[in-house]
Length: 188
Image (cartoon, rainbow, N blue to C red; front, side):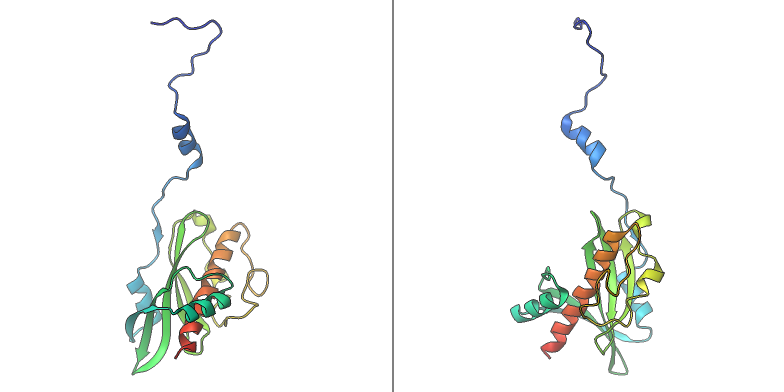
């Protein structure tokens, strides 16, 4: 055994700085809470309808148009559009939006009515702590909304006490979806 210096304390096993920082600062990876699958959400939103998935690549003009409407850059030109028809008539268009809330993702299904207003919003999965999840009563302020300057937190959209980042991320997702939908309709 080696001799200890006088006055030195035994510290037990030492963690490397990186391991210590990871143990203290990095969030644990909790499994995502999945509330429903895409298929379940589509069936719930469009009972008895025929849903067709289309893959669309936005043109530069559509991307610019959507970015202006969203108030921020659209992250991808690739868009998956789910059009639901009943007896050949369009009853709604669904979009799935995956975005980061604080450090972890949330997946939403947003349904746009034929008139361009948001018809419904559903949370499909949420990885942040459950106390940050937007309650159904808060989400109820979105259906019927059109894309305009009032569609923002602290304007027509109330915030969520203790979940400000969720409120902002969800509102941005609604704006982004309505802007993409408008860009697609504009080019028809």
